[in-house]
Image (cartoon, rainbow, N blue to C red):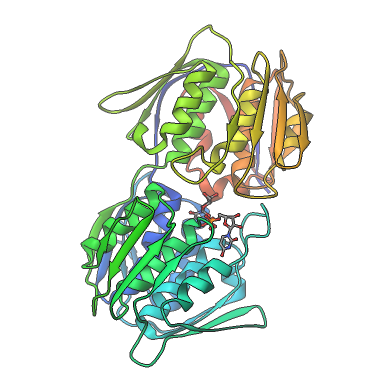
Length: 430
Ligand code: UD1
């Protein structure tokens, strides 16, 4: 099992190219199930989650060509992938495929919309809370789907003649359920209104792509999305937007170690609340023509309180990284997690590096310490693992991060990107 060894203490200086967003690429890839034409996606990151979804889509009949080639080879940063699903050959998404990644459950929307039926295993994914699927099921029911949950599978059937437009107001904001309902509604008969929809940039990116495929969608990026059903969708070409979580993660790494880094090809507008928070903590952040420049010179890290919220609030996917930063602040900060109930697994690992953090329900109290010291730590989920890397970069001595397969799910070429900026980071394979 791979591990990552970090010798901390160096400032970060240089350029880090930001990859296409994992959380946009996954739903965009799933949208290829909605059409028999070719959907071409540019800037698809090379990540374990993307590879896993390629296997799942292949099982449903999607033909995949990466950079024009159908046989897979080692690829560079940015890949252009053609997805063609002439016919859906299987409407079942089995447990052994879906259990590895929660987002694979989302195929339920397009399968149901195009074929009128889907049988999808209940999902797996990061162990950061119970993460139920009730909102997906209620949303699809509002489009006329008949649902049955049995033996670990959801079986969904559309009424004769297909899904019908409906009205649904989410009792709680869900990114995944918004993606699924929006995709399903594109091929429904009549108009669908989705209220209290998620407003994340990845929702807007999916809507843009669906519109390019011929869907009639308005309001994506606001709380109310309206979808007027069409009879079929065509192919399209779409570029995956930059990864705002990767952007925020490296911005926090620079704030942590000090230095001066250009995050290339990204856009600060995708993560304003996180950048505002980082500015309060002491980083200088400026948008340039080529990306986002993050600088911290000399000045210390100020304590800042945050509460995670759906977009446009502070993202839960940056909470662990921000906590790592706050371990080095000059005071006490409070971090409240409102999206997932079990997303503090990094706390005990950060403590191994010398952090002083106490938990009370959904709130962490982080008392800044003068220094962190390297230690062996265990990655527990995707975002938690990268918080340990950030802490390791600022710790004195050697930090060994175990179970890095979590990192490979969501961070493209992490060691290479950090090494290019002066960090001492290496992968140790056994
Ligand atoms: C997506 C992101 C993930 C991010 C999360 C919140 C992808 C691939 N993943 O996950 O990185 O952390 O948004 O920004 O885009 N919930 C229910 N019932 C449901 C569905 C969700 O109660 O049927 C709850 C969840 O348990 C959680 C909250 O709603 O407490 C938000 O989850 P959701 O927005 O659905 O997260 P994901 O789409 O899984």
